[in-house]
Amino acid sequence: MTGSIPPWHVSPYARIVKMNMRTRGIAVFHAEPNACPVCGPTLTLLDGEGVAVDCADPVEKTRELLSQGFIAAIKGLGGFHLAVDATSNQAVENA
Image (cartoon, helix red, strand yellow):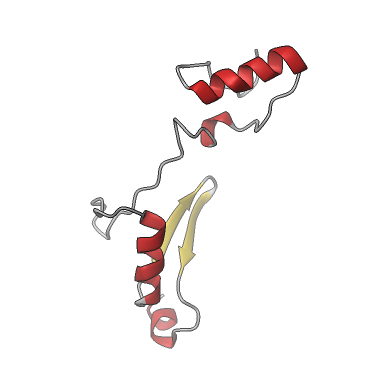
């Protein structure tokens, strides 16, 4: 196989995609690097110092912090997205 597809590893999801490519000639959910339920992505909430915040659900905790006026930088595939509660004048002014 050529292209940007990484070497197949121990991920059960990657094996399913590989099987689909061999048997049907298609790649279902052809985004192995960022769409494997076993390998990731994983979510981690970091504080302003880069230390992991201990929480059960980073998305819910981020929503809670945004509602309190905090600003979040969310890392995506193409860079960072800034998030702020646009209905809060104080949060917007701090951004």
